[in-house]
Structures are given as C-alpha cells and as structure tokens.
Picture 1: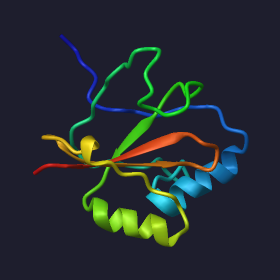
Picture 2 (picture 1 turned 180 degrees about the vertical axis):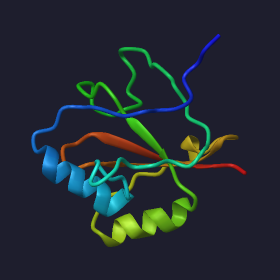
Picture 3 (picture 1 turned 180 degrees about the horizontal axis):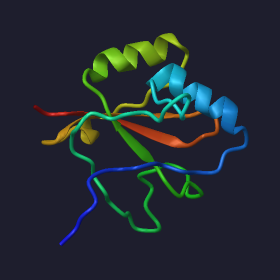
Picture 4 (picture 1 turned 90 degrees about the horizontal axis):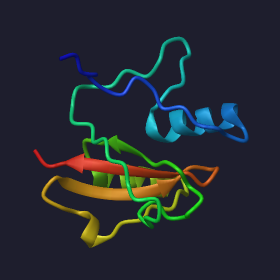
Length: 118
C-alpha cells in the first residue's frame, strides 16, 4: 500500500498574503517559495482531526491550526517575546510527547510550537 510521507504544503486564505508570508519567514523561518519552498527536516507529524466544537484552537471560527516542531522551545519563546509576540503556555499542554506553546499570527490564526521529547 502506498502512503504519503509528510506534509507537502499548508494552504489557507489570508487578508494580506504577502505580509503574512513575510511574518512567518521573519519570526519562524518558514519561507513561502522564494526562490524555493521551505524544506523540513525529518520528524514526526501529527495528523489529527478534532471535534467540530473543540475549543483547543481558541476561537470557534478558526478552522485549522498548524503545529511546527522546534529544537529549543524556551529559546523560541524568548525570541518571539523579544519581537513583541505574545506566547501562550500552559503546564497541561506538556505531555509525554513534549512541550508546547501557542502564538497567533497577525491575522489571528493559531500556531502551535512543539519541542518533541528526545
């Protein structure tokens, strides 16, 4: 049986695609495709549909949330906060699979950051 081997892209609507692309590249290092798409390292990717009434994403009108793996969550949090970006953490979010934090991009989309356990 053939299976997919990772995320090939994440596509979503934006009020200002150029500005939002620039924000993701500046603060998270995720480039659009200029001159080539962002290249990920190997690692786990969770694919998890949630119940329609979940409050996990925050606002009920948000239809998606992306999760990015990071090597050093504490360093990433410090970097984001130094840039004036609010970072949410909660002890209940940390689990046997790693540590988590959450930010929102300039258009209010939730972005989860995950430092997997080694």
